[in-house]
Image 1 (cartoon, rainbow, N blue to C red):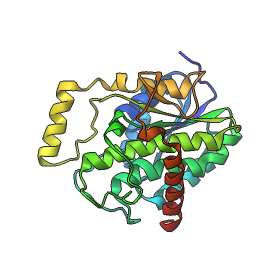
Image 2: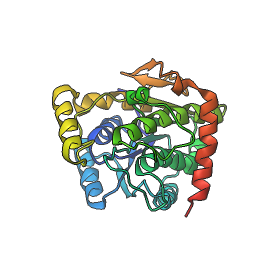
Image 3: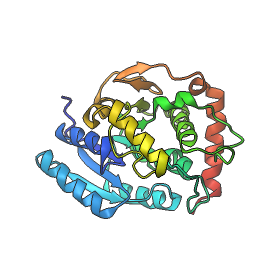
Image 4: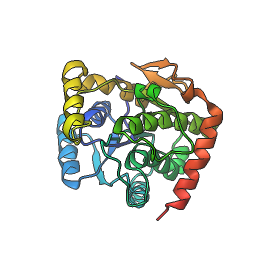
Amino acid sequence: MTDLTGKTIVITGATSGIGYETALRLARMGARLAIVGRDRDRGEVAREALAREARGAEVVAFTADLSSMGETHRLAGELLAALPRIDVLVNNAGAMFAQRSLTVDGLERTFALNHMAYFLLTELLRDRLVASAPSRVVVVASEAHRRASLDLDDLQTEKGYTGWLAYCRSKLANILFTRALARRLDGTGVSAHCLHPGFVASGFGDDGKGVFRFGFGLAKRLFAIPVDEGARTSVHLASADGLVSGGYYVKCAIATPSPQARDDQAAEHFWDDTVRFAAMHAR
């Protein structure tokens, strides 16, 4: 096990599933944790459980609905006030929504939570990450990105929305974001990495309804891997040496994403569009 004593790691979506398991493993490696969840009570339960299971690890819980840009700004301010250094940021929080809906900022909810939150929180914490270098950003993407192409004219999936389509597009966005971020961080001592955790038997997708929830639940029972296995690559990218900045990892090894995910010209256009979204909907 890598010794992470003295390292401070921020993990979003850390109150359950692979986020919690990632936090637990990193705490057992000696890291100080700042966990983020959308429910205060669940965050406190997770904080107490992590401190107990990791034998007294230092864990601080923060609460924010990351689908809201205002909440993300508030969270970043709280993190910066509480954490003198940030060695690793793990952008893990994410969801899939069967029905299309809009956030308080007027953004499609999957896009807002699975992409905009990653972008915005990383940008707001970037100076602290640079000051803490060598440091890194870890982004939880998915092999589902192979099912999508990015329509720069329909980033909000207004045409032909399905929960699966919006999710796949958001995971493609995660990889393009990571590649563009790595280029911008070159020379700062901060690296950026993304990963596929596997199809994990977590609570992901359980808030769906009807046929969507039944089908997703059946697939998890038949094909999903345990949560602890799903966390392995996140832990690896948060702690291992010799990683490729901008790289996409599967089962702790560098992998080649889809051709669309390797389109750096599209990634730059998408980055510019994301900056405009952040400015237009800033609170």
